[in-house]
Length: 188
Length: 222
Image (cartoon, rainbow over all chains, first blue to last red; front, side):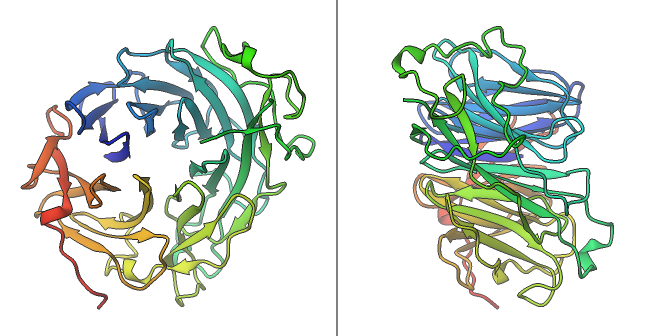
């Protein structure tokens, strides 16, 4: 269960996994009315969600080697954008207005990728740009977790973690994190 | 968020960025955006599409991290990175810590979050995370029906709030609420008193959200 806030609302999301296929279920609390709806049914392994444009929620859900992006709660089901060949790492997503940034690990990659999309008023996805982040040679692969956040000026930070040995909690040399920043810019 | 126009920072090294739009199933993906007419032709972003994600860090910034998921939060002008620091650490052992940085400066030393200590810190189930919203960012520790949080930025030894859900319930997340309190998402055999909404309306997913305004249990550092 995860929560996110925005536009005066709190969003609760859960991964329904008692029946096949696993599905992201979304509750919108607050505002004029509470509502409940489901994400798409691709067989979700893991997901992340972020408030979108004050009224909706953008969900990034990984289904095997595919990553789906979908905006919900804005009236229609919205177009589903699919990225293929991703590693088994939970994605992370944030939005700023109608701009959406998602971080994930491409198949065989040693560092995450951050991709920038725009979701139009017509409920369509437009690709803006993407960037493979620098590799940290000191991290053990595979990468196992990541997250991202954005500043008001368009700076996006992505942090990720590699693999630790099973007893790393007591290890004196456990060291497995990295982060990098990118700047989202557009020509005048 | 206002995107930087003109993009003065286009110092990507070879191979460190990929201007090609990522693969997508959308028929429109990769096509010029519908509002492209409002954008002056330029190569300032170093991208034919007019948009770029320009690297700020040429190399990844390495830091010590234990075996928990990382979590990033933001107030809009500052990043907060929460992670488990390995051993040795400033707190003489593995401990949860936080790093603060902005758009350009590198983070300083990890700031141990002493108040996040819990007898079961070693449990893999302890969650440590940032939660942002309504101009606040919380650093949250939670395990089962217990959660503590502190609002940032204000590194200090005391936490701002603590909450124990009823036995058998699990606190799934803690986020800022619009009224200055926090919302806890709780799931378990039944929603806690004061629930303001069902979390999932399906079998096996009972739960709800609790505003801590009247049930928050403050405690001082002990």
